[in-house]
Image 1: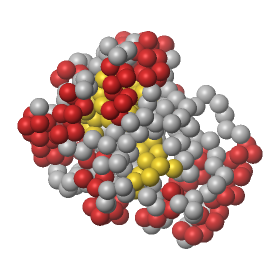
Image 2 (image 1 turned 180 degrees about the vertical axis):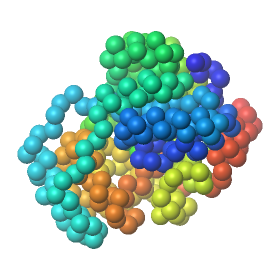
Image 3 (image 1 turned 135 degrees about the vertical axis):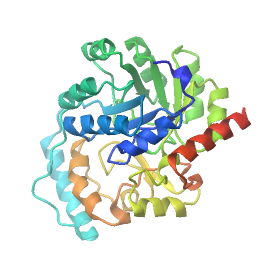
Image 4 (image 1 turned 90 degrees about the vertical axis):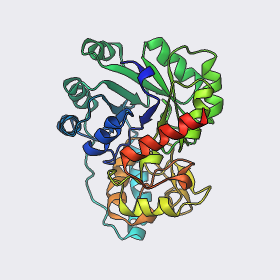
Length: 334
């Protein structure tokens, strides 16, 4: 797998947005499509991979979240649950007594090996050597995510094939190892990493059109990864209210919050970013589990409407048309 073949990567977006048809359309149009599998079971990952291939997607990526090394503090979880009671009440959603567990990383990773995508990408940490070797044995390229120079250097030392440099402008979760780590502006992160990392660098965060792609590639990126730009595509399984909020977004419409999952994440500003948000927050991923029923059952004010800082520049068009448009804009801006 050579990243010289791709100028554009459709960012992996977990939570059911990047369905098989959506990913296949991106790949068929010439981008590297990505399945956001962070919350999928092993069986669902295999089903998604089959679906992408059945829909004509050849080369594609599957993305997972590296699990935290520490178990959550029980007292923090109790406090976080208590703090969320008023949020559930305000949204008119019944708070369950039990919260569904997340699939195990072991199960997910075994499914990735069986699915054999062209690329396995991951975020929130580093992949152990034995698992890197298992991917290599199956011809799967490896891409890690960095939000700092130190993280990029660590991934390069591990021997990944490329590094996604995620600027703080990115929508969704900040991919840092430390859930509370600060972000960096993408242009600064790319400039700093160019000096110390010789691997292909994939720029991500706030990129919305071909001119943005051209800017980061002139600065040394091998490819550009775009996520928010694809959220309004009809093939994307983005909730209707989410698409509507994106269509109405003005500059400065996004904010960051830890209250949804215990990790910093950027989305369209709503209750999670203001005084209605809970003050006691459980560590990731427990907070994600505690808020999941609320976000699924509530209206727009309590959903996690992830989006990058370029949300106000989103466009509504089919995936293939958007890929072609982005590539044309990029070439015109070179």
